[in-house]
Picture (cartoon, rainbow, N blue to C red):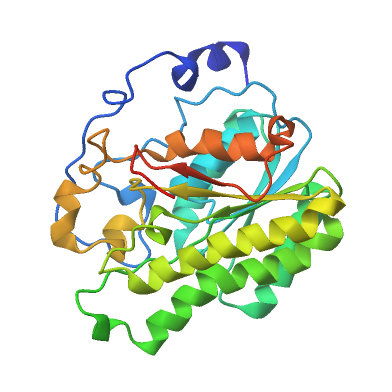
Length: 305
C-alpha cells in the first residue's frame, strides 16, 4: 500500500464514540435471493476498504479464511492483508462477484490473495481447499473457520432435514475436516480462529439449528485448544453479536425483523464487519500468545457468560 493510502486508513485507530461511529441502520424488510451478496446490500456494509489501517502485525503470515468474500470474512481478509499477511479466501461459486471485489481491494493495496471457490458441505473439497491454499501461499500459518449458514424459521417444524444437515455441515462439521487437513501444515506459532456467535449464549427462537451449531463451535474451540496447545498451536474463537452481513437479509433474519436489526444492543446499533476484524487480527498475532481456548465476544455490549 502506498504511504498516502495508508495515512488515510486511520479510522479504527482514531478515538471516537462507539455509539456514533456508525449510524443505526434500518434495512428494508426484503429478502435477498440465494446466499446474498455484499454488492446488493442495502445499506452497504463497511468492510474496512477505507477504514482499516494496518501496522504490520501479521507480516509474512499465510492465512486461509472461509467465507472470505463478504461480511466478517471479507473484513478479516482486508485487515490481515493490510497487516502484512498473504490470504486465501474460500466462498461459494455464486458469490464470485463479492470475492472479486475483495481481491481487487487487496491487490490494489499490493497484497497477495488467492481465490478458491467451493462448497464446504463437500467432504472432498476440504482437502482440496487446504492443499490449494498451501500451494498458492507457500504454506499455512492461520486458519480462520468463518464460513457459515444461517436460516431463520418462524416455526420449529420449518427446520427440515435438508436445512438441519446443511447448517451442521457448513457451521461445525466443516471445521473438523478443515482442521484435520490443515494440521500437518501448521507449525508452532500457528493459530486457528473459529467464528461462533452470541447465539451460542442467547439463542433466538427463530435460529434454533444455527444457535446450536454455534454452541458446538464454542465447545470444539475449547477442546481443540487444549489438545493443540502443547504443540504451540493456539485455538480461539470470536463470537459476533448482530453484525450487518449478507447472512442477515438472505434469510438469516425474518424479513419483518430486519428494519430493527441490531438496535437492541447497548450501543443501540448493529456492528459493521470491519469492527470485528481487529479481534481476528489480535488472535492471529503473537500479541495474544497467552490467549488459548478463548471466545472473544464482540457484540456491542450484550452480556455473555
